[in-house]
Every structure is written in C-alpha cells, then in structure tokens.
Length: 177
Image (cartoon, rainbow, N blue to C red; front, side):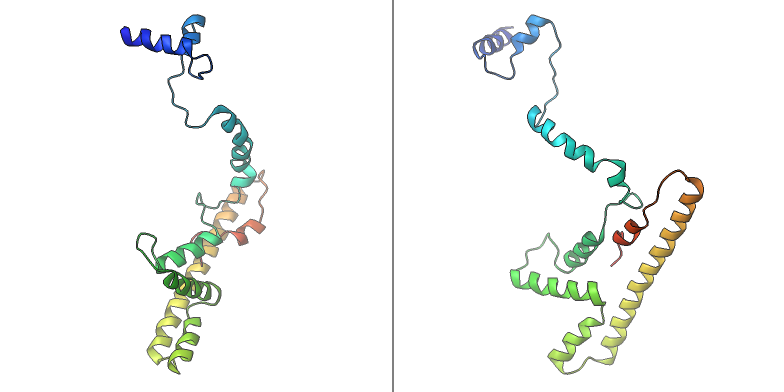
C-alpha cells in the first residue's frame, strides 16, 4: 500500500509523464498493462508502410508461402561459401563474392576458366565434376519450373476469380540459382 501511494504521488507531481496513473484512477478507466516498445506517433507513422507491405498485391509476389527471391538465392549461394557465423577477412569475402557471381550467372563451368588461367589447363575430372554440378543445378531449376507450372494450372482451375500476374513468376525463384 505504501508503494502504491508513493507511485501515485510521483505521478501526480509529474504532470508531463506519459504514464500518469492518477488519470486512470480518477477517470475509472483501466490502465493498459501491455508494454509498447514504440511510441504511438512512431507506430502511426509506420502503419501505412506496414499495411502496404501486407497488402494482397504485395503478398501475391511471394510464391509457395516463402519469401526467397532471386537476390536471396544469390545471397544463400554467397553465404554458403563464406558463412556468417565464422570470421572471414575482406579478401576471402571478395573472392567468395566473385565466385558466387560467376556461378550464379554462368554456372559452375565458369570456374574452369579461372583454373585454366591459373594452372594452364583444367583437368578432366574437374571438368566432369563441374559439369555434373551444373547439370544438377539446371535440373533443379527445371523441376521447380515444372512444379510451379502445375501449381499455377491447378490454381487457375479452382480460382477463376483471381488475377494471376505471370510476370512475377519469372522474377521470383524460391531456392533456384
């Protein structure tokens, strides 16, 4: 009881305090016990942006309930070479970035050009290994496109009312690189 009286006394004295409990006791309204981490004016400022990001048009770009787009696919390739949880120097990150760009754009056989420049030639087994990895990558992409095409065809049969934007299918490739 002494603590409550002390708290009330402090909040009565503090007229500029945003947590004026005396007002709640005086008006008889219930005090909101939830902790709000952002001030109300900040929440009101970001609410339109949040509603825009959560709109159906924006969420329509997300396929299969995942949010991995082409950039995230590239980032996963990059961070698989230089994991974030281990320290890597800037030089290592630069090398990994260059390799990730080459693999992402031209496939694994592009590493053979580097080996040819460094060593004078690329060995037969290196060529076979890079070719197999590259074929697996292309096959995975083809399976993804086929699976996605079947899902879109099934969705069009069941939902004739929804407009489908075919351009977004080419932009977003979940896990494909």
